[in-house]
Length: 424
Picture (cartoon, rainbow, N blue to C red):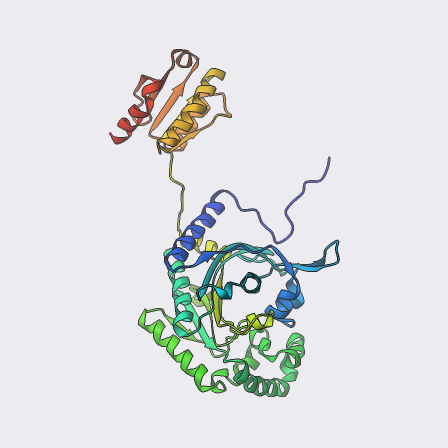
């Protein structure tokens, strides 16, 4: 017997109640995207690897350790997309969207791929939704993306959301901070992990993301002490805007995100909870400004900002918080017995759908008992029963599922009678 095949490690099937939760997140995201004026975009699952080495950053963990990269039969080097922002910027440049009214506002809900250790709410194929605003800058644009994501999390029942926020400054003023940070890290070299010792020369900011070198990070210089006047002013205005719309935030002077393209304001969303008396923080996603990404991918420099959120993590919390999302229950169930009854049931099912009456069936079953059991489980109000006799008479039996009372009705009058009984 051939061995049973399973999904690849770290990748999961989405079905049943899990799919219903995903669908709820999707509905809320799409609804809010429309309200805030974002249009949908779908980019290819596979992109030229250079989009990520130049965009995400050659020395980031994503590019160095986590990307699924391979050569095509034609010799092209491509990667399964590990994140959404560089592909969207590539599409913006490729299709000349800078000629359209600015800003261009995109949203997405799609799967991404990273080779990392699977854990609760984190997979090698994972889903994200995100928002990108390209072509206009300013603190109010950054703020609106934060407000949009916060409102979505709130609508989905996610409690105690904390927004950690910082400014990374622009390319120019950040260089001064990198020098100060590198000097500090070199002095503490003996206390650094192997990865951070390598990061000191390649990209010292990545050391601030390390979970192993927390003590060294806590003693490091803070970036807000090194950024220019304009970056400080932009950051201050974002905080003022957040206070105006009553979005809670915590300042995190060591927050730098894990990607090279970020400039200016950056932020992450966490869900705060208590376990054994201690506070726990579950990361849900984050974002920030990335004005230099367009130039890195071959276009002109353009202001841009965006955020991306992990759907699996959000669904995990929705379940934990007891949020229940069920499909609309059918009001009517069609049960049938015999080939002629099946034939008439198929037509009746379509007529009920056209009349906007929620209807269910079990055409694959022949046992009337099993079909009625299914109707009861679905909590249908009415059962329409078509047996051999009813099919020959061109009639159906209408049964009230609560009282058990039933009557025969002509097929031509069934829609009218069903609507009447449902109103009762």
